[in-house]
Image 1 (cartoon, rainbow, N blue to C red):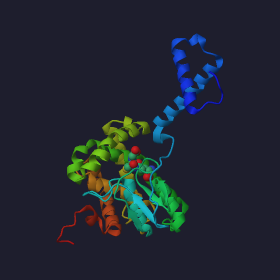
Image 2 (cartoon, protein in one colour; image 1 turned 120 degrees about the vertical axis):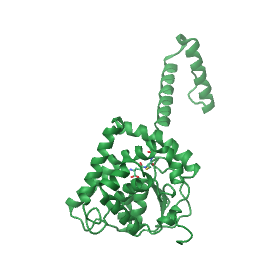
Image 3 (tube, rainbow, N blue to C red; image 1 turned 120 degrees about the horizontal axis):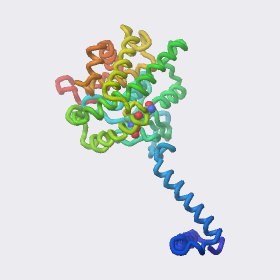
Image 4 (tube, rainbow, N blue to C red; image 1 turned 90 degrees about the vertical axis):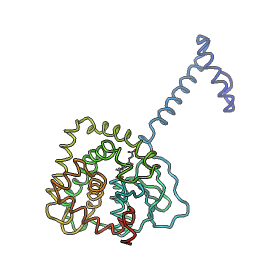
Length: 312
Ligand SMILES: N[C@@H](CCC(=O)N[C@@H](CS)C(=O)NCC(=O)O)C(=O)O
């Protein structure tokens, strides 16, 4: 290999010749040639790994609007379907939080994944932000909101534990029940548009199976998983008891998450074992869900298109 100062094209040509030589007459390669080949191979390996590792290692660049209103929340989730205003428990939770906190938001009609490769996400002051929990923490600080102000530290701890149980454990039972076991019913039952069905819900099955396996919960039999879900829902029902909201007489920050999750069971999974548990075995969960819906979603029927002309 000759010449230290080469143009990129010349360097590429030289590299190509070195590779040809490696394949045809490797004995003629100098130490410098071998070093260059080694470095090039390492660079290609890193580039391939970087590309294939995808969202595991980096956040994605997402397009945000340039003409935003300062201080306004632009919300991205799954657009409403006939069954529910948002098919994602995390999306329904974030929207319910925004309503509870009295933070106006503009929902986006197009469905695109956020900076963490997931939904929901928001745009705020020209920045994209992902993860419902991080968004809520951010907005609490930004807007001076504290829905947990009435709670003692021990109550906050219990509240967090319930949310984590639902979102990190029970969620997978729900994802399997809704998206894998009953997928054939989805389009008909929820009246999801073909676009959402084929480009989001169908491919989602593969991702859910992969994630469930990585989590570990996907390695259980159906019976084992159903028993886990049953215990989680029983714990939630026992703790809720006859209280109107999870932590007492007034709703707190855990309620949007609990509602976002239970609402999926109630309105998108009729006929399933989870629906039976939440309605027949622990009817206080159903009553709670209806209470939250009535309080924060007066436009539910309008959004889902279930409001008839006569009702309007
Ligand atoms: N921790 C996230 C979880 C969000 C999440 O898992 N969203 C699901 C939809 S329910 C998603 O986008 N999944 C796509 C994927 O995992 O690739 C949050 O709280 O926002």
